[in-house]
Length: 196
Image 1 (cartoon, rainbow, N blue to C red):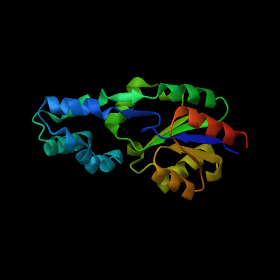
Image 2: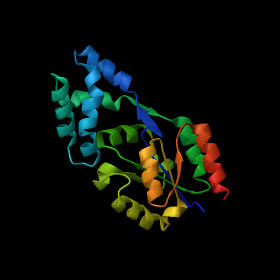
Image 3: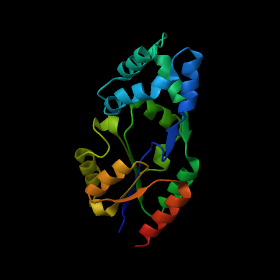
Image 4: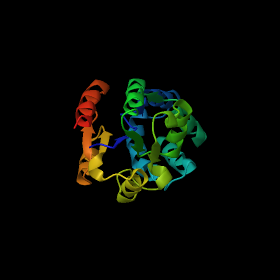
């Protein structure tokens, strides 16, 4: 029986419109084609709070040849948030039947942007962002904390993510999983799992 549903943020609950960010970079004379690679180069450290906001955005600015203050990159990135409101409508309904939490690799800049758009407490009993725990979202310390916080077993948890690698890692902990490909598909799969 599922007692807790865990949602990822990235490309599930929301995303960043990288084209808007890349358009900004092109306007200021930077090679936007380099942004994704350099972003990924430092993102994992930023998500785990091993780089400060200034360190991350300064490194990215340097790699991109961005001539202005690093904070302009951070501010522009915050403007690119796209919330998956149809999913949040479903989460609100789902919360009436089962406990719901958010579990995501997320840096502090992005967390600020998310919290400025969404009252997370209206949708989730708990929120677990990697940078706040200084570890990856599917690392044992975070999973053990969730198990303890909710008094559940791994097999009583349903993890929803858009990335096969994360789904596989959650399965290895014994969780049930759904690969997110869209809201309608998710509703169908989750509702079927909740009936068992």
